[in-house]
Image (cartoon, rainbow, N blue to C red; front, side, top):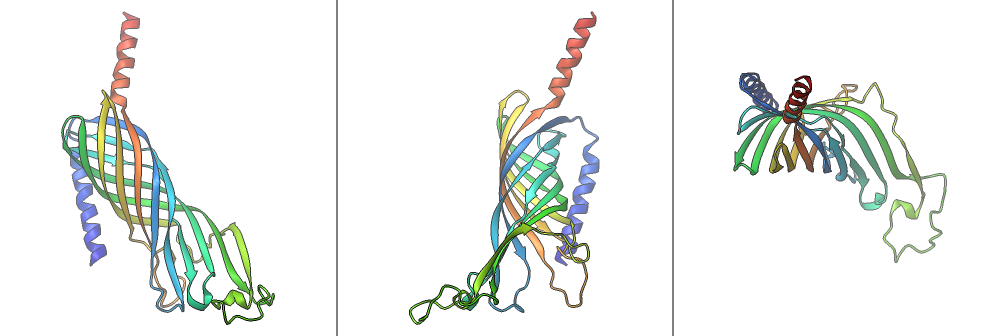
Length: 261
């Protein structure tokens, strides 16, 4: 029911989008960059002494805004976004972990509702996104049963005993080879954003925005029975600027006309 309600919301947004093109508009383009934190949402109740923890990443994009009127716009920000997370073991297996750094090419599409004065405005974005899992790198440590003892400890009574007191850790740091059988490289989801923009000069504005992305598609393909789904959930904070292209085009046309005359 939750997924259906989100899809209905997205469909309603697309209907509003189709109606918006009937009005006179302004066109902006710019750049933005920021940091994010990604959570891997899954069920680990069937895994002993295991948890997933959120990891920070970065994102960089090119915001494009189609301003229909003073309070309504269409917005898209093609971007590269990291969606990182870490699997780690607890208790006796403390120290065993795997850090996954994943790079996504992502295109969100939203409607934007603005409020406030002429110079300083707040705004709300509601929409959806599509993403492609472009790259992945893993780093971690596991117990190596072929190398014993680990640190030459003869008396562990005074130490916190973990698996690495008995086995030497094997460390790895390598590119992850995406598996076409089990890894789903395409991600669809919904997102919302809340931001503030400031008009610093005619046709120029700077902004900062918090965005929340919620994936609706599993990170895995259906390759086994009773499979536990895995979803990305990402929050980001970005800063950037937008420049009105329309003013530049008008200046170019006027200059050309004056040259001809």
